[in-house]
Length: 481
Image 1 (tube, rainbow, N blue to C red):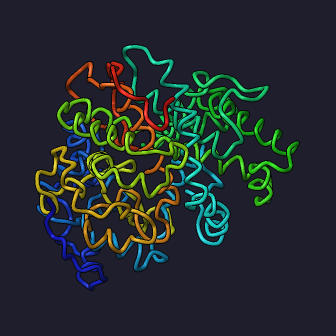
Image 2: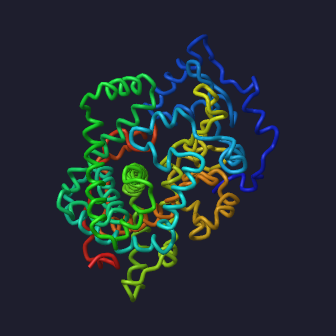
Image 3: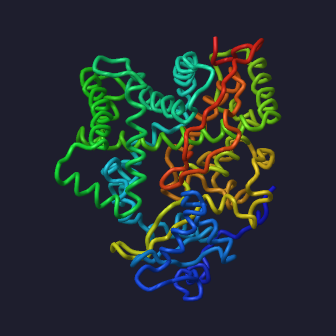
């Protein structure tokens, strides 16, 4: 159900020159303010959805790439898959991450792989690469079983699904990277103590996208004032440090092996803060996928039938491989459609230079995923469009195949800086969602989904509540008992 499958992926002079053509400037530029009034009006009409505001620009211009100006800052906005491939893959070294992005993310992610550049980025990526290999990712199966079973058993009739997914994914990060579940060691608090602090940190980072709020926060930080951000940040850091101290006492643990790869304990803590923050992308994806399925009872039933059949066909419940998991083609299609409609990172930023006011390139993944020139029924939830894709096409070794089949689909970015944890996130999402659908019938309390907030990540602007009714007369499956 896509158009333009045969897009040619190579650099052209036309693609590069459009970034500088005067004719590509969005209309409505006013002195001093640039396009700021136009942007604020579009943002208001989009209900605060930044990517929705960008999408309205494309509908007005009928262009794939154009320039606009916010105050003194020139920006290039694009939904062109070929241009994105040029920036992120073909000539990625010429387009570094922007200083603006670092200013926004540094309070949580400074020193981590997400904001690092050059040799520092390469060194950190090499350290973590083995932990996202197939051998390590397959250990997610028992971890998800333990985590989901404990959390779901405490669910009532109605849940705040985004809160619950944040809690589950944080607990999984702790079990996978930090030596055990949240609350396991002396000095830990319980999961519901930490989850609200993660939500506070995300909200603070979102506010830093806007320069005025960022300036205000930087002043309060310089005055060493006690703020919500400082309190929440220190609580999460203390949780990580407590695990580091336990690992130092246990030299044989996998956590101690990871720590030894870093020059200092402080650098490791910063990297783990980045990992925990990045884990929120999976939480929000699961929130949207759960909501889309809850809104569509027929597709939910079809998905449950596939999962039920899968469960019944497994004779050895302890030997479920990732290859077998990929055989659930409709589950895979549902997850991919969720990634298309609600990409975890709604846009990718790069710059044409390293000075503060050098032009910023905004690659709108959200708008490209909903571009009617690339997708039939772009706003519809239609998992069936993915069934012609080969299972497992999203794995690292098959990225070229993904580009040929779906050139307008980049939920994890592209090129050397493609999300290192994409395979981890996909396997994690499938396992968690399988358990949810197998155990519960999901129904939206409010049938109207909220507008997406796409300041940094794609999350709902208001809580989404689900009614979760246990499925009666069903076997628990290979994860359940």
